Amino acid sequence: MKKFIYLFLILSFSCEKDDVCSENTQTTPRIVLEFYNLEAPDDTLDVPELLAVGLDNENMMVPITNELIMTRSMIALPLKTDDTQATFILFKNYNVEEGVVTGNPDTITITYQTNDVYVSRACGYKTNFDVQTFSIIEDADQWMSSSDIILRQITNENEIHVKILH
Amino acid sequence: MSFGLLAQEQDIPVVDSLVVTEKYGLRLGVDLSKLTRSFIESDYKGIEINGDYRITHRIYIAAEVGNEERTTVTDYLNSTAKGSYLKAGIDYNMHNNWGDLENLVYFGLRFGISNFNQTLNSYTIYDTNNQTWGQTEVLDSKKFSGLNAGWLEFMFGFKAEVLTNLFMGLNVQLKGRLFEAEPDNFENLYIPGFGRTFDSGRFGMGFGYNISYLIPLYKKTKK
Image 1 (cartoon, rainbow over the protein chains, first blue to last red):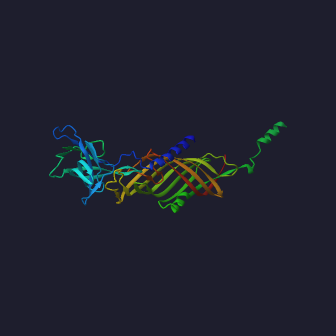
Image 2: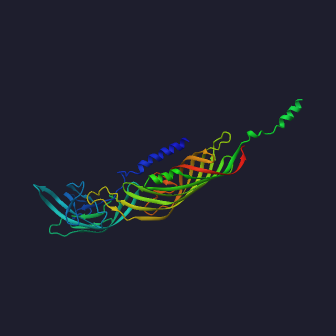
Image 3: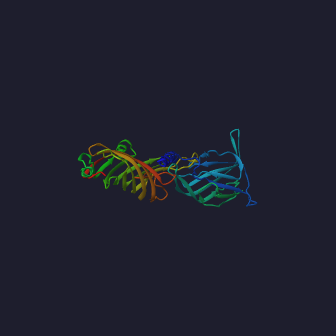
């Protein structure tokens, strides 16, 4: 009888836990880009004062949550879970002085397929992506010279998906 | 003299008033908790008919048959399970009745089987980075048919005779899933007859609140 009561207690506790999506649960992954040195393509190279913003279908800039101006060689960008294409502007040497934005903006467009994968009762589904194309839009003052898709399947953020030379 | 007395004692017939008989028959009932919940809760519809047939002083063959429809709603999804189930096994009455009372305090063992389908009505993509592009909600419903599950169930409860041949009973059930057919890229959140499932494993639980009527077929002397 004691064992029965114990088991009932366990079950009623797990009842609460099962219905709430834990923040530690692997979420929809972002695409991870890493920047490499054009002169030495095996070495990563920091991008000074890098900042990314999204570009919506009306060509309006959309700020990315938690995105900060930072010198770094890696960046993770959120893709749209209800579309198959996303565009971003990556600024090198981003700076704002008296309301005037300076820096070198380059535009990238990623096309992909989405695949909704079941997670759990509490969290529902997350989206994995299959990268189709990655393109850098040509402009007169382009700081990114070329890109290479390393991994087409985006299932987590622990791997590099695209390598960019600059 | 003493010899004669002994002989007389041995001849004493069993006095009629001390003979206690027990009713044997078929008891049929319904689960009132499922009916009540069907009226009160908008996300639940269910009915269960149960019965037992006495075979010995303590042992009854017992079965339940039912149909349930249950909608599960969490922050990220909405799903409806619908189907029928059958449970069969035995009840063992541990209670020693006084005189001609016919109450039961019993434990039971069942094998249960369920055939059902699940409809994923809608879901929201779990994406903690969705502040940039917005949250995606998928509203196309998707039906997963031909699902089934089987389980073993321990039951503990009582049945009290409140009027002649009319019983009220309460029981709790502890279940362990033996097998199940799971939908592709989804899981069984609720199994009719088994109840809700848990992430932690194959255990489940339930309870019943029954009203039943005994159709007496014959009587047997209580041993």
